Length: 260
Image (tube, rainbow, N blue to C red; front, side, top):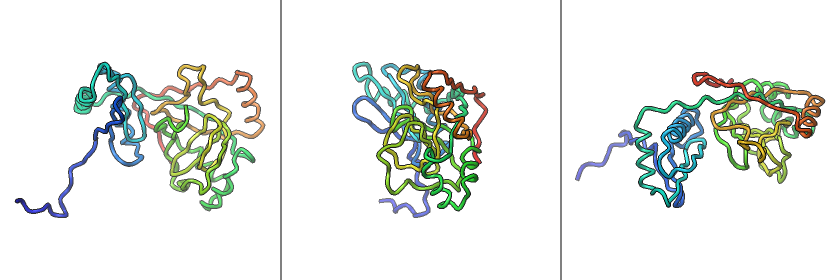
């Protein structure tokens, strides 16, 4: 019997690893943390699957650190999908389609930002400093989830990395911009939420009549721009009237986002 491994031995990296998700999907997991490098690997595999179009694969769903691959069990089997994914992982990395940069107006005032003062008090910053720290970085869209069209955006400066609220709210208005755990979310529709609400945007993030319905996609970038309340009200009225278009700025594949 061989001797037990010494405590200083380095265990092999268990990632990427394959996980079953029912009988119609496989998950390829790249790690356990929310990390830009891991998310880039998720997006690279997503691009490779879309380009290769393995038989029976009907949808891919990128997340922070994994890719769910949905397949038709009447066309293919889990083992075949796994083999195809393993081959794609072992080949050269696919070029990720260049994302888009969205400039999103946000009002950080009054009833639109009920947690802003508490965030400032907790962090020891002024209201202006909180807003400046939130509007300075180029935020990366890690994934879309929780409710339709909701983007998880990172990464916040360390000074704003707060835990979730102790008491979640039953209702947050559509357009709420909230922070927690080093990330920002924008609630596309009225929904419950446990994050710190620091502003609101008039931009419509999800529209079932639009194609695609979700405004943003994983790999996109977001820059928040502060607007005054009167400007916000005018923008929101224009949205209601259907005459407030928002268009992204195209990005080159080698144009990464930056954080403060």
